[in-house]
Length: 244
Image (tube, rainbow, N blue to C red; front, side, top):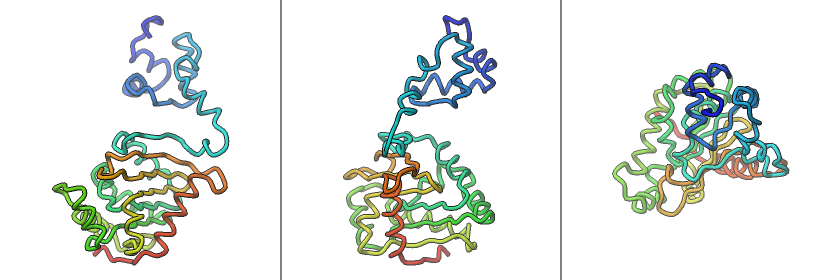
């Protein structure tokens, strides 16, 4: 920008985006703007767009199962909350939250209760698969994590929020079966139609310190299908619960 004699605000004006958007481009080297914005920014700066965002070229060349990996994050907490919010907003048919507690959603997503209510009213199926707060695996996990906000407390907070949301047609909640609890607590799958956010939980780490993958279903028997099929199997053996 200095070579072109433009400030971030001036570049934003040339491209037709906000100044904060340009600031995000500068601060996050992994962020890839929309193709039109990349081309407009490159034209304003007098350079080739591939010089500014070479990662866009690499992603465009993905083939086979690799195409399903939209992005990976070394920590779930490093995935912007706006990614979650946009996926929830854009889902039309199926929202499935198969984290063991799902507690963080209520903290990071503003007005989630009302947003989910609108989703069910629009015909979207909304499901929550939770660990049993009184289950043996929950007690084991609490001893492993050894944190003040216990696993069972985090589950019950989710149940409280669901009680405010329901009962609604299209909203379902289940506890995973005792024989599935260990598989459930070690892997969280969050589905948004053909997108999914997947977190394999590492050793003693809590969810936000474990890695996350953003997948989009494009392959038969690909990564997206493998993980979402796993979550559906857990759901099928789960026990319906009333959040109230």
